[in-house]
Image (cartoon, rainbow, N blue to C red; front, side, top):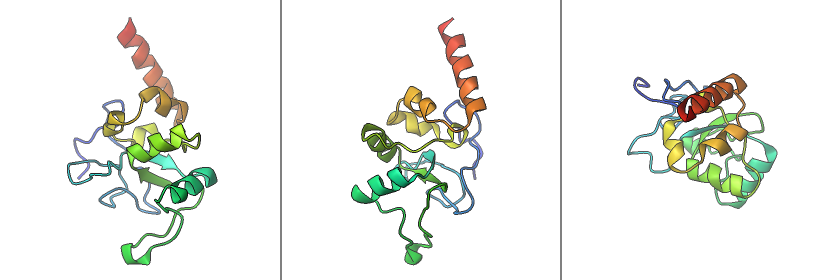
Length: 138
């Protein structure tokens, strides 16, 4: 199901998280297509500050919702977050860390690559992005 899906670098998208299982389709991947109007593209690692912000903004990600099989997130959990929500969190100063290799390229429709890179957890991938940026500007 993930074949042909690309991350921010145009490489194959890697899994964000299987426990709790995430993604719009609950595949563990931040896959995005026309059915995903929320654009669940950004693979984040939840923090206390972000979860508090999200709840106050009307998207309670910390409270379990058994009806939808949602266990509720705790700090350290990885999750496919809506790209516009990550951008809102950035503007509020509480953007959670990001796994770039597991973030769908559709996030770039809402978020700046440099902002995402500044919040990257996957440093090796971040270095690769810097190298590609330098190559393009040469």
